[in-house]
Each structure stands twice: as C-alpha cells, then as structure tokens.
Image 1: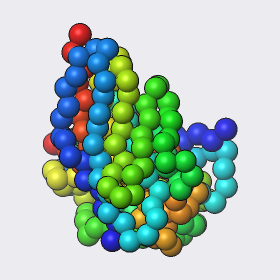
Image 2: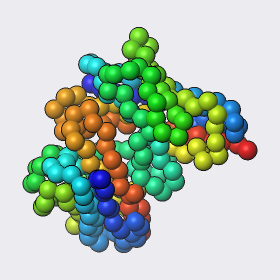
Image 3: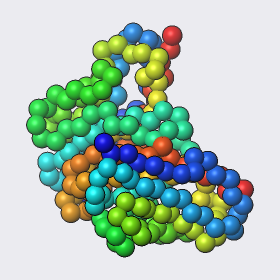
Image 4: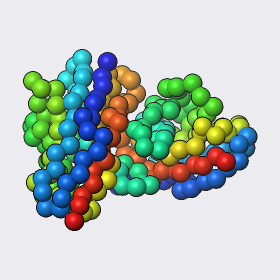
Length: 112
Length: 115
C-alpha cells in the first residue's frame, strides 16, 4: 500500500533562518506531488505542485521554493523565513486528473 | 473556472442527531468532487469521492453525499452524529483537466458535536 511521510511534525525557527521540509512517498511510482499551506482558521492554499522529477509549478508568489530531486521526494525550502511563513504545511500525492489526493500528517511551522 | 463554496463555516449538532454540511460547486465541465475530514493538527483524510458514477456516494464512518447537478450541490450527511465526528470538513472539486491533477478546496466547515 502507499504511504506518505512528512517531517518534522513541528518546527520553531527564527526569522531569517533557512527552511527545509521533506516529504517522501512509498508504494507508487511517478506520483503528482503537492505542497499546501493552511493558515490558522483558514482553508488550504496550494503552494507548489510537481508532475515529474525536476518539474515544479508555483501557484503563488512567495518566499518559498520547492524541488523534486527524486521521483518520490518533494522538498519545500526557504533561504530566509518571514513571520508570515508560519502555518501548517501539508504534503500530498495523487495520480492525476480527477483522482483524490492523499495527505501527510503535516508540519506545524512557527517563525519567531 | 472551478470553485467550491461551503455554505456554513461552523455547524453544531447534538450527539445522535443528523449532520448536514452544505457544499455548492461551480464547474465548466463534469467535475470530480470529494469530501475530506481534518482532525486538529492532523493531515486530511478522504471521506468519499464522486467521479460521475452513482450520484449517491457512500464514504467512511457512515457519511454519504449526494451529487445534484441541477442544484450544483454536493452536501455531506450522516444520520447520527458521534462525538468523534467533531472536526473540520472540506468540500473539494477537481481542477480543469491537464492542470496537474490539482484539487480546489472550500474554506472548510467546523463541525462541533455536543454531548
């Protein structure tokens, strides 16, 4: 069966520090991969998605970047965190059009 | 463009009473629709999905939803609420074809269940 791993579960970082969140998927090949952010009390905002290795689509201009160095690995990064980057970050995978997404357990990021 | 509107930001019910969470969608083609549940500080779990087969869709934990094209609705129901149903619920529509399989989320409905 397919599983998705996302870490760390919680992270507290000072403003201006770098960020690296990692997500890996097991049990499937060539998945579409997604990073969502959920601000407190709000819905989900799609940040990035990828349909293949090295292919990244950005949905909103921001302080973050994403990379996909391997088929089942998706990384969210920042060179310098802002206070506004605080939130709950969710990684997900899917198999394309009209298919559901399967989510990781999320990372709670607090920028202080 | 595809969009989804959840009509209630918060719903409160008593344990053992029916649950109704309302969702309307907008789509320029026949969409796929989903309901997800999120418990505090957790990821999202798929409750059910509609992909142009039967209009009444049964999901996990006793939930079901009915696709009504004439009303552009996909409301989520459960006959009898349980305390463990207290969570955030998201109605979701698939994006237009060839947009990387993206899903578009509603703003969520928080369900509270009173003893």
